[in-house]
Image 1 (cartoon, rainbow, N blue to C red):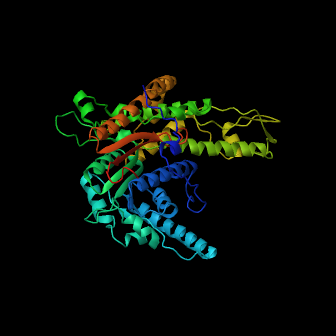
Image 2 (image 1 turned 90 degrees about the vertical axis):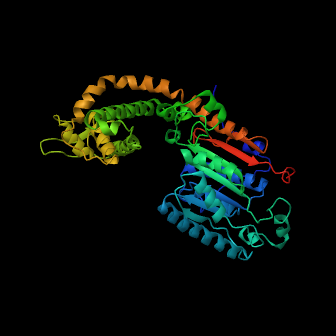
Image 3 (image 1 turned 30 degrees about the vertical axis):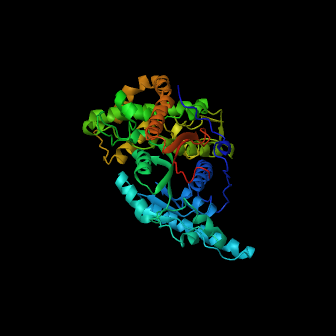
Length: 474
């Protein structure tokens, strides 16, 4: 049985939630998927932050700061954006300045006066442990004091709300919420454990991804420091996954169901390329093959490139005729024929005589790609990603000839394996939920699918809050 990942009615699940559409300026640079995610998650995080009277939100694995900027500018929360990449920090800062100018300009035009705007504070740091994230929270989040109201853009009348019981403790601690949009691998696990270990952190909203990167070790009697399993129940049961199962947990049943036949076949053929590439590694680079290397989305890059070529070819064929050689007359388009994983050049015919395929390709402005040559490009890109210089001694064509007879088995085999993906993801999610529930009645935790799974397959948020007797009636 798998967890239902159909998008929940988050307005019903979180009373008081008010989702605001992103304006053109703050949504600049986001693709449709990212906008959908940020729009929903920012509303959820803001609602959770208000429910625990948080004075700051820490965006863990912030990337280019899309979530952090919406929480800061649109929902007016003080936000700290943590990411391991310094370039992401610079992009976040530059983008925030542009957004700040826009909001400042709008305030001037409206005549409402200039109000303090929250701008996300960026920190470049690789979070590798609970201790490192806890230290970042404790040292980076502003202490609770009267000046905190200025960070929130509060007026004098609102200050009383900040000073009410439960708003801050005797040591001026600042209630904080941890948020993560697709925090990769063990980072989601670190967030949940930091939520328990750091008294400043009152809530966490985490959407994980990249289960294949979770750490896992043999089950022991002690507390596990690895990403799976987290709960005592699963550790005592001796459950483990292994890399292959963790890989499968990343599969999206929704996206597979929505593929048309041609896109599905392309997907299967890309998997055939990857399987044959593993044969290359096993034969010529066995020391690399044993480390189960990741080569990124090479197949998708190839597909996009060849789709552009195919589109260019179709546009050309719809245009005027062209001349190839003096002894050939005008070339006119014939019925299109698509072959191979990415499609080949359309067949053409002449009014007098035949022309070669190379001449047709020259006329159409594209190179005719076969499965074999596409496989070679795939391998060269994969080897480059692994830092391996391609050698002419490596017989890529020979490997493909050996693998090609089995390529048609990839589709059924992969489909059967991928069908287990939702079940394995459910196991990982329930392990995390059970880990939190094992901590007792001092907190509440639940799973909530907040995205459309057809747009964003990793759509289940783990939401947990510490129960404070002063906040029960809030």
